[in-house]
Amino acid sequence: MNDQTAKRNFDLGIDKQTVMTLGSHCSLQVLKGAKDEGLNTLLVCEEKRFDMYKRFKFIDNIVSIKNFKEIINKNFQDELIEKYSPILIPHGTLISTLNMDELESIRIPIFGNKWILRWESDRMLKQQLMDESKLPSPTQIPSKNEIDGLCIVKLHGAAGGKGYFLVTDKKGFEEQAQKLIKSRVIGSEENLFIQKYANGVPVYLQYFYSPITNELELLGIDRRYETDIDAIGRIPSKFQISSNIEPSYTVVGNIPIVLRESLLPEVYSMGERFVESSKRLVPPGMPGPFCIEGVYDNNANFIAFEFSARIVAGTNLYVSGSPYSDLLFETPMSMGRRISLEIKRAIESSKMGLITT
Ligand code: AMP
Image (cartoon, rainbow, N blue to C red; front, side, top):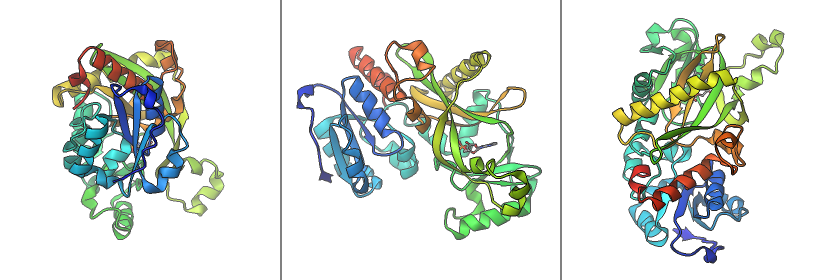
């Protein structure tokens, strides 16, 4: 462990809780929010990004490591616990770096329900939880032999849409799958998941559920900005076929959205159904941030194709609050800040057991 601790805020006092996260994904927003709530902040980052992160004064301590995989090292974790007693905020990078056995073995208390992250990264469990929550979702295609019409083929895990492709038949599936196998992105076709393509406009609903108040909050809405699918619209249709571009879905950023107000009752209802079913299927349920992801079709009906059972990077849009958080809070409330507010409330009411696993 190469400890390049900056220690800029001695005046905070040692009794203050430390919020920790990995340097990637939404770490800046999470730690800024923690600092705004008066908590200590700890970033574990890869050496190559140390110079970037040290620019931000709200990060009290930076510990750099060669590779995020080192986070599973028990001695390393014990050192962090001994020195900082942190709460770890999980995000997409933690999930894509570790397998679920590794993640569940982490000794540092994790904000939220770490057991539900397995349900996020396993496509079958994910579908089960979405079905239990009565979220309308695209038909799942059990095998390549049953591909009939436009389908989207996905990889397992949180890879930000990387490697996804579209097919209309078995032959197209096999061709694209072979490319991924050759480039060693996947081991075999078994690693792919086929879903009917849901035609509509993408919308990502960012929620926070507090088990302390038993309230669900909608804190923001975004859509992803994805190459090449969002680039294709820039090519006039007469050139699209000859350009021969295979659409891919790699996320490069996020764009804010506000919905028609008449759609909000169903948005809240979907979030509540998700919270209730996760309590039944994966105790203790869904404390903290989560996101339901899908499209609105031409009847303005929502079709959900995914959920994330932790903070999503689209919340980075709202470091100073969103059109939705502003309706609920007097202060600018990012998702990162909301997490730290919950930590403070849990400490004050001795309910840490409700928000960490
Ligand atoms: P995901 O990793 O599932 O969030 O998906 C990444 C991107 O793929 C989304 O933002 C959508 O643009 C697209 N996508 C995923 N599933 C579907 C689907 N069933 N129908 C249409 N587009 C989809």
